[in-house]
Amino acid sequence: MPQQNPGDGGGGGTTPPPPAQAQAAILARESAAAARATVRVIGPDSEDEIGIGPLKIKGAATVTWNPNELRAEVTIEGGGLSFPSEAQGDIAVRGASEWERLPAGADGKVLTTHAAAANPTWETAPGAAGGEANTASNVGTGVGQWKDKGGVDLRFRGNKAASTKVSIAASGDGNDVEFDVVPASLLLQDMGGAVTDGQIPAGIARDSEVATAVSDHAAAADPHTGYQRESEREASSGYAGLDASGKLIGSRQVYGTGVNTACEGNDARLSDARTPTAHTHAEGDINLGATDVLVGRATAGAGPAEEIACTAAGRALLDDADAAAQRVTLGLGAREDLVAHWDRSSTKTNIGTSYVDVYTPTNGSGLELDIDFTGKTQVKGVICWNKVGAGTQTLRAVDAATPSNVLFEIDVVSGRNVDALQALPGWATGVKQIKLQAKSTTSTDDPVFESCAIYLK
Image (tube, rainbow, N blue to C red; front, side, top):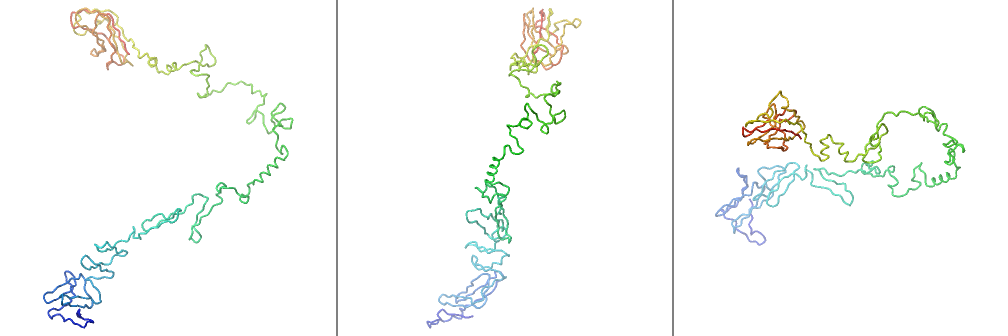
């Protein structure tokens, strides 16, 4: 292995070689554990091994001995570096502390750096499907053709006519988009001005032609052939007209009794009185002479219909469903109806403290009265009584079939006793037979019953 002394050169001086025991050697080897290439420097007092990463040195190397610093400088001469595992496409990169091998990336991957503190890596190229990270833009102030990018697809706007006045088509060779005006779709107002005679289609009159036609018409005979003056439309001028001397004849009007014919003024059918066919009219077809009226007849006997006064107050009563509703309309409220009345005097000697019938049954006559409670909600009793005795005397009206069903109950005094209106009990429905009963807190009292009336509302 060649050795070079630092002193060799143009100065002529030489530096003695290192002592025999201070030999410098470069050893290229691969460790099974670390796969490292090592440079070993052997000096007089020590030896050092300098690791240079997972690679090996190919080719010759020059060792320069520096006796002053007891160190060897190694220069690799050609051949380059080699890794324990090598393949085409691999890249040598500098790691955090030594050189490292970066295996070749997959097809299409690109080498991407991550700043100075990290190793580069193989990455997918920018774009959703590996396309380039590019875009497009429109220039100028018009409507641009560029729209956006979808993955690797650059998308542009299509050309579309806003009306039938413009046509858009590809050129014959496919290299151009051609825009053109459709003359047949243009109107005069679309052009924003007048048109020349040459632009007027055949069949449309020019101004000069219209003026000539009007002039010729004015100069023609009056009336024109086949026409008739309005002032001369009568028989004396040779035309059949509707005047005293003529009538429509011939093809102008057909008279007769059949379909599509007309009656003449002296037709007997015009004086034929006929009974009208039965029919109806909508309310809107009838016209009345005033407001607040009804159509009818107030005058005695048969005759034509008449308008009868009917004010708003009268109409308010007419549309009520029944008399009770009319009482409400009139502000009278619901009526209290007298539905039962007992007026035969009856003395109850030693009446006792338990309820007894006011009337002692005799042939079942005059003791119980039928009352119809249908449509009623309240009841009131009026009793005339002669109180004889010191006890509290009470009269009640009950269901004859079930005396425990009490309609009303009043503690009575001498004279007229009026009970206040009270709600009907739940059993008081339909028709029920009602009778009267009385009692006193003193059994020896002898009260005299005079009369009782029952009102329902």
